[in-house]
Image (cartoon, rainbow, N blue to C red; front, side, top):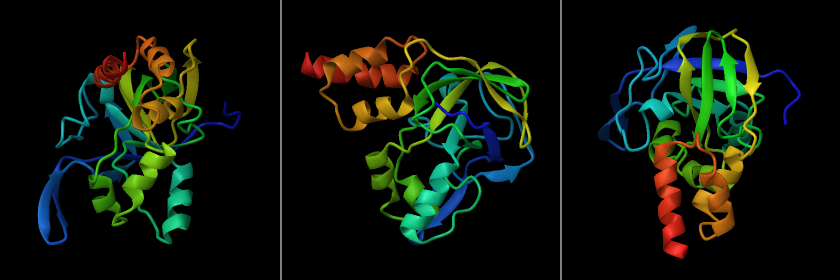
Length: 217
């Protein structure tokens, strides 16, 4: 687990808006504006919205996080420069990657208390937003998807807010491990059962993994 301080690099919100890709308009919530603070409650971030409720939104997916460490990786791999909140996240955090973030972990983030619920299930909108067509495939391959928090206590989160672990979930199922099972090792029955033992797992992930389990049982 990380021993360096966890830091917020960017905070962002944005309502769904039109984005043009290859001459076609699409309505998306991925375009976030960098702001100095966000206000979160158990349903949403104020001033933030989603267009595709299949992958975003709801009490299990209030705050979207993307690790800052991956910015450098993708910029180097694809020889490009990425803007703040390039992946549509509300918080860009340094020091808490998918290999360190466990489902069910609880963090104090500024005034808010947040709990990790699931890895993000990425879609083609990320490729369209960044202008990097292969990046979606690489995100799935690496498991560097980012993740979601639910809000246990409402409050203000500023760019200079501290992030501290309140409680580590006893099962310590990392987001990276869960991503590997959901996307790649889909017939690993024991691993699926291990993830499903985490009561705090988001309902959409519970449904997906339960269906995977049924298909191999």
